[in-house]
Length: 340
Image: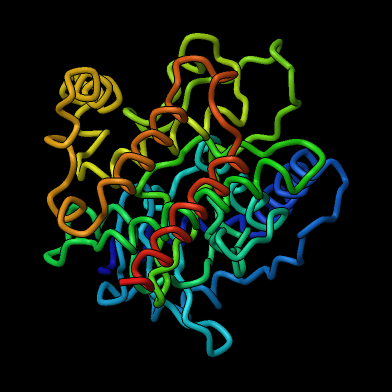
């Protein structure tokens, strides 16, 4: 890592006690705000010292780096368990990043489901907390859709979509108030060793009151996936996630990249709807999907995606409805293949 980086890290940890107290207080407040005192699914979060963190990743060994954007993610070992350690790149005080990381931690602790990435521990001694998560060896859904030499099979895409829908359904219904993810995209879905999908990146998650329209939230999320109604009104409901999930379904069946399209001034939803209106939807479908999915499956998933991205939130299904629909599609597929 070099002497300069080591020197900067020493500066960051000078006030470790103050950081621990301040970050711990914020973390507790966020937990209470999300759960409203409800203990459903909540669990104890282990806190680690900076020394334990550094030991787990062999003093920031570059050979252990899994990826790097706002933070550097290392593959580490803690208590004989392989974990992913998210270390902030910026060593200076940053209230936005602190808020992002502690919201993520609080959501991960309050929500406990097999299709949500679990947080293992955290270090609160640093200006921006360091987070430790379960290690998902197959990386992000985005990588397998757009960066892998081996094209992702249709059965895997359908199963991961169902896993993600199940996770969102849980977030919307497990507590007394829905928890809205606000960052549903293929980068936020990680895959375990069995290629099961797990939803991650809870930094934008908020707890909302159903029917409440007076509270406005800043528009956050990935371009191309953000609910246009949310952009227009600033109101967050669980239907914001439904819209984003619909875009994810379109990404899975078309192989297109919504964020890249958005940066170029086009919208995957608009392009797909236009193709459907012109009876040229097949031209939009990824060749891998065309070669493996039945025409009926493609129609059903496309129709489901389009209901999810309806312009008005009230016209979209709930994530419970979406899960049931995806289960039916998978069950029908299994029965048809079993009869062949």
